Image (cartoon, rainbow, N blue to C red; front, side, top):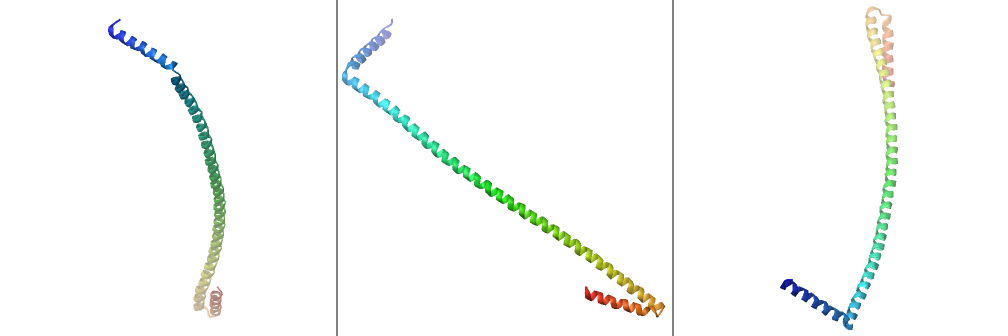
Length: 156
């Protein structure tokens, strides 16, 4: 062995002897046992705190989940109500659009019928003027037609 290695082994041996003598001392033994007891108590307290924290965390998590589920139910109910209202509004709009289309079709038919009557009357008046020039007997008929036109237009 070299000199340096011998010194290290002798220092290690000296340290071990010192530790053995120290460990045999009652004061040191009581301090060591007190440290062991405190370490054990700290481990127990840490375990208890961890359990309490876990319980608190679980309780908080459950509360958050409950609130979330209530919010989801509320949103779902509101969405269903909104869907019903939209469907109802669409149905009313479709019905009124159908009624408007029917009304417009009715008015269109009436307008076409009135237009045809007016055209017939205008043609009849035009024929009445032509026939009045050719024969005098037909002239009173033309006047009657003219009177009819005025009566019908007043009625409409």
